[in-house]
Image 1 (tube, rainbow, N blue to C red):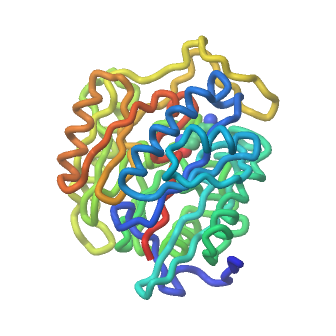
Image 2: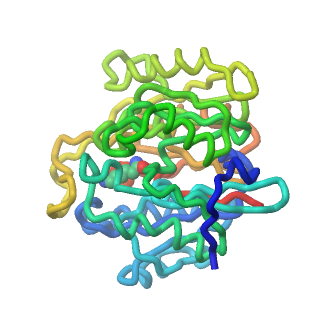
Image 3: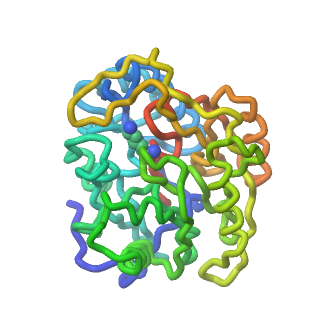
Length: 364
Ligand code: KQY
């Protein structure tokens, strides 16, 4: 049985590794809810299957599927992908799944944050979220991983990145949003990050680019490429809705040092030429308790929402004029990895991308 540990990773010598460190497997959740995914989630299921297949060329993948969708998911996914029945509210394992932490003696544990659908009753995206809130625990039971539970502290995996060497980056827009931890000060939130990710320094980027969806998760804006190096979204088009965030974030990161005192090298990663919008042709159910997805809504598309895997990087593509530029820039950042593009407009329609729908479990 997976035990609850009444301590913190920092006290016990466990740290969250950088995504670029060796991984054991990737988790995903099969999409199905028709009030988030268009056309009964069928186009999204095809895209999730394509992402899972792309990742499985590099390392094992486990897909969690509801009882109603288990057979369909099993039949639509390649045989080398493990499918496990598990109930969820939606399909964002980055955010409701565990954050794995490891020590240098082969120990692996996880942090089980509280999850409240990106803002709870204040501005969360759906109600209820109780099944999603149990996903981290269920994955840890499955893998026999002991957990640290942050009772009363809300956090999603897409809202922070670490370099594995003492630095965490996040956004004020998300972590200080009133729907997460309004009872805590910025300093108290910073202490939670330091204690549970085992870090010494927090880089507070001001804004994200999807205030209405995740309240500005950092995984659309910036990430660590390796210790001492980060990537940052970029555009020179003053009419791009995210021009200001790109320039402010780039200027901020260029001024920063990490926990080890290194001045950060900052790689630019283009934004798509055109953002994606709901056209009104998508059939999306309208259900009480879920924020409606309506014609004209922006569905934020960022190439930054890629996933680093063993020997590879899986990068979103949008049928956009800058798709190949984005792949080229990611290849320059990761010369020793194979960079694979997967068309993910359908995930964007649901409110996220490759990084949001995956969660890595590191090698012990
Ligand atoms: O991490 C994410 N981007 C999740 C967004 C949830 C969207 C639900 N409509």
